[in-house]
Length: 353
Image (cartoon, rainbow, N blue to C red; front, side, top):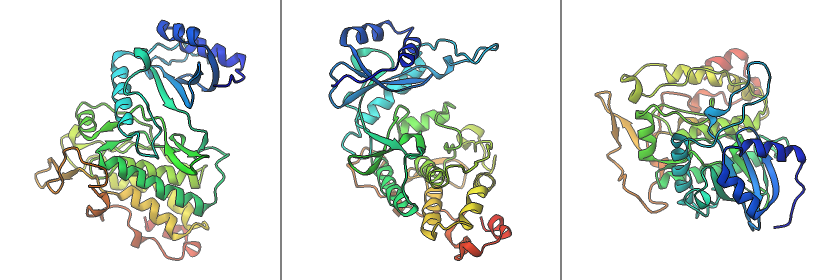
């Protein structure tokens, strides 16, 4: 790989980031550092040696990132502890199992590279995230790209795989393939692991994009929110209490998701009704938010049950179509949105959610 210019401040940041990881420091020293395309206080993307079309991502434990009381400086982060290392390790394994899905960033290995905790070898994708100002697509192009991204989510669901951290920052527009691709798959889980996480109260993902309930598809939900934020980058989503799963609360009706969605997306609905976006844009958003959970249902005894209509054993791609699952009519529905957006009043906006 051709050596790239590395800014001195990035070298300093990298030294701080990897301070507690001797095997990684030794690996970089031995192979040579040829580029740092991205670095922050939580992770770094690096080109090490002759990696070909691959880059290396190094992550640290989020709980170790703390600000000093007297300054804005960060304490030197620690390498992954066993808890987060296991979460990332299973994410790598699930990502590796999706290598044949073109919309997922390729992971050539199923574990940490050379056993170095926190170091992941990944396909390097030249592109821009959908949150970036460089992502300049008109509304129709954005809708078409997100429709394709929804198909990627369905391909993952065919294998009972959940990304768990879909957001504009993790949706990359691949300049070469001209499609949206999901990156940062470190939290990716299969269905059984996701269920265990809820039972164990292990929350992961990004506030504002997480759906912790059981009625809707979490990845589709996050994709819908991401679509809204891509169309309207300055859209304000008020921070509200995330809906708690009955797996945790032991009862239903707690932290009503219906009220939660009304509060969370009132700003989006108000803006889209007064904008030049077409009905197709609103319909896509609502369809993603309302998409039923493909593997769970709620029985009359207020218990969670596996959907008896599907086989939860591993299936070949394409055998399960989430769109065939009956839609929910409890939340936002297409027939509640006025056909003439531009003439909608503010009262319509708030009442027609």
